[in-house]
Length: 197
Image (cartoon, rainbow, N blue to C red):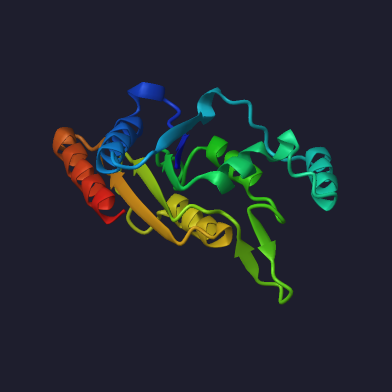
């Protein structure tokens, strides 16, 4: 079975979000040690993923019409479809997440591949993952502006991923806050998520 780790931690291993993702992966593998799980990581920071343009969209539409879904254009979408569980790690930037993650998700969202339309025009997801976990960190409180996770939840509905989980370490940049305590509390939340899987 495959866990797809979409690493959108732009600061690499110095990232606090990345630290939480490593905690998640360690606990996940320990909990699933009786099963054959492989982790496939995408480090978005090191990948050359470009936003769709008029030209690239036209090419994608041409390939889609001919159902040439084995083309490299659809490699990321096919990878998403084949994952059994998805972990996304991304810092809380500008009320959501880094643009690189949006570009990646745009590349995964392909009509006729990650989702299809029924004869009634209702989208039907084609991904096999049973769940997705989204981990983030923020310098201040996220409160009612959790647009990154809300967007991810919407895509999961479109892709056919029935369950989502969320863990965040917030207010990490507020002077006087106990950073270690906040991170430890978030790791406890991660443990709870793993217990639910």
